[in-house]
Length: 164
Length: 419
Image 1: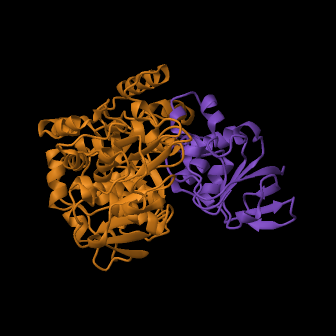
Image 2 (image 1 turned 90 degrees about the horizontal axis):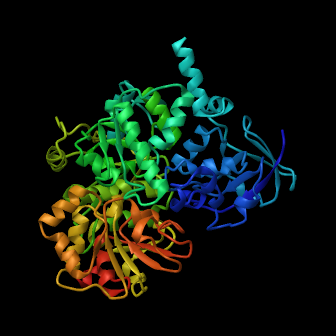
Image 3 (image 1 turned 30 degrees about the vertical axis):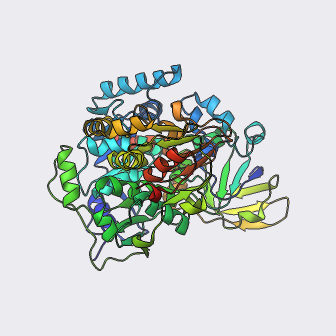
């Protein structure tokens, strides 16, 4: 399992920060360039494949806009860790196949740390500090959906099974 | 088994006798609502990828409110996609440019107490003011509902908020919910169903109850709800809804995860400072802040009662010359009723600019967008950094009373000095 760089932010990171309203009518590849720009203009330019988005409490508070987790995913974010999530953001991320994991110890992670994550056991190895952290395990039905790549492929399989 | 109103509606939708908090159940959806942002433009590809069609076009409501009134090529394209899709799918419950979805949904006669609904927008809990259980979901979850008519939910614990006593003059439902945002924080009700009760809530108009359930989203709630009463049924019948009865109510011995008591009598007008509704404090702590714009708008703050509150404050007066007083009624029906009774004229005489109905200034779109370094006060629900306009802009939140008083003063002002 490859490791990724951590991008660490605070509490109440809202969906307007991850997907500003003023660009929502634009094509997806344009919206993504503005992800987090009001807080950290370097993020959208520098985040890359395999990186991990880390936050404090209530990550994704606010709008139902799925572009928030979608932008993170498009920028290459592989996992999202937070002490707690806004409920719609949480569902949206998992539906897109982006594992959103509840980790109470995100304070122990700094931007730039190399993290290795096992979404099944919930174990997070911080290769930079040598520490291991625990995430709450995902409920089985969500883990299955994540394994299949999100709700769309999951539904496609399910409907095909039922139709057969 | 004793249950809360939310548990009863979920159990009914799940086809079971009763449910317990924490349990995961699959519910049949009575209606799915979406707008021009979460709707057709994001559903077409996803439905194709699933290989499914709309499960029941009669149970789908589409309301355009985000990218209206369209003037740029992207927004025009989105409106065309939306209109074509509802025609192709045979969706008859379609409202184009008639107002903001959370207000048009009840106005369109689509709601009946006891319904279980999903909406492709975070302020979907607004329907809770009508004794419905409605949750906000994202685009892919919506695809799942469109394809199957079902959704999984974790049964939420219920929080009961008892608002005792009568609200003083110049104080509104907005002040109750802003005060609650400060008290329990933006995740104070995360995943919970918030049930509002108490004398103050009973005395509130339906418009005012809608403010409480609407902003349940701001405390992280799965939904907010108020049991229907005679007022609710009258309102819905006036809208043409096929109402039979009040639906469900909580058992007197229902179990709550938490009970929060609020005393309406001691409440001051509240103002939320940038950049969070949780930064709400009594207006006295923010008076004097110079504002370039005072905005009455959005699903939260531009219903008929909000317009009346604003008119009550500005009647016979003129707004401050250096402040734009912008009013965007939440629906055409509200605009027409406000015009008929003279409320619009009162606002215009005071110097208000009336905008067409839509999400507009609440999400930094259209003429009410805040410019660089501008400060605005708004009757909407969220003042996250950059939401109402430029990244450098500063958004404050208050009731329609407080916004109107601030328009007159050119600074954040205490509406009790004007009522």
